[in-house]
Length: 418
Image (cartoon, rainbow, N blue to C red; front, side, top):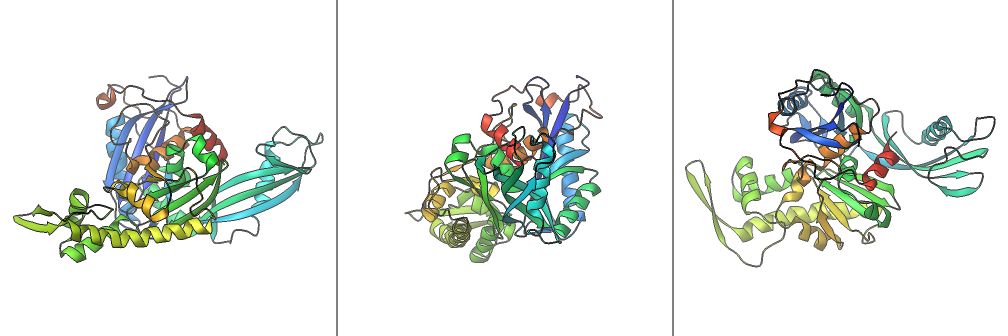
């Protein structure tokens, strides 16, 4: 194993599940190859925020332990996801004078104008997660995407500032540190998923990514290559499961199994009798009853999503439609449901931009974790192999490269990278 080789780690800390993806970064291409995957059930979180430090800390530790055993690496650093309705998207602008004597725009000038743009726009109790520039203006010239190296005296910015409540960010960091993992960065889960599933054409023409988790559903709208809006709905797959538990008079664990095995996001035209074995009891159910319960809750969730799209001014106006990610998006006929409720084209998002073959990470449920790993791979401080155990990686020895990082993914990284 080369001494200067590196690894990248993404940890998607969801309300109900923690998913971890470890990638080995190829020294020649920079494309990460998935070498470790870990999953663990989570507790101690409510609607995306930490309410008990011990639960997420244990779940992160368990998921990391599984990924470490598979990859053979000792993991000490990672990029984490953050979620919850406290995450907001705010438009901002600012102006500075170019500081250099020859009036050439430098990186420090860009950092200064970003800082000016956020002053007074973000309350003291909030922490800035991302500053996404729409465009720059230099001495009256509009539509500049990257002003570094250009000559001028007056630099202006039009940006989108993503922020989160500081206590929630701090608690997530503490939970991670309790699991002996230092966060490189904290990224909203829907942005991480976007980095893994979107193409350049979709980013340009207009698309929304809907990350459907256990207790939250996040929406990110992109157009002309930029993030236009981000919002979080405090409902998800757990709400559907709980409705089934009440309607069918079963416990939530049984309701979840029935949802996955017999449920449908679209009410089917025919009513069939189905059975489900629970312990020693066989439950007799009707598909019509299951579908109607699921449909009622999804109607509410998609109404809330439509409101978020209206806030962004893009309801029914996205040529590339919506891309669904997250564990709850895998429910049967969810794509058809999204098309019907939102009046847009829809598809399931399949993570890309990495090499290695692993059935788990190719599913929409792992889109955020893969996106976090890809983000971590772009971090200049991504760790070299520390504590690596050569010869202890037999589970991934047969992996073959299946794809490289697309230009769209790389452009999106560079756009969001702070």
